[in-house]
Length: 114
Image (cartoon, rainbow, N blue to C red; front, side, top):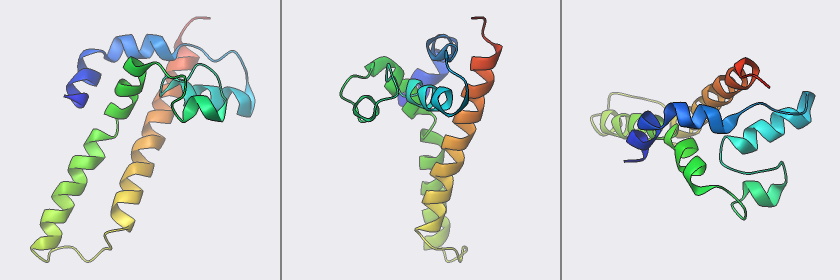
């Protein structure tokens, strides 16, 4: 359901990310917080005290693919087909998903007018 929410509301989510008013590191932190519905770049906002729940759910939608890829990995591990640790694979999948989401959000924020 979370993945379908992201797929259906993808253009809406792009619009909500919008442009970053600031350049440099502050702009990147603001963009990273906007990906998950926080209005500013404060830590309290990022931890969920003042987030937009609709944007937060869309932002979490990007993490659904690595979650299901990890389930496949566990199945392959159960059959004894993969030698890599259970810690390395999920961490690398989540980091990869967040990196792809951030790169995508950076391109969207640069392309949007404003």
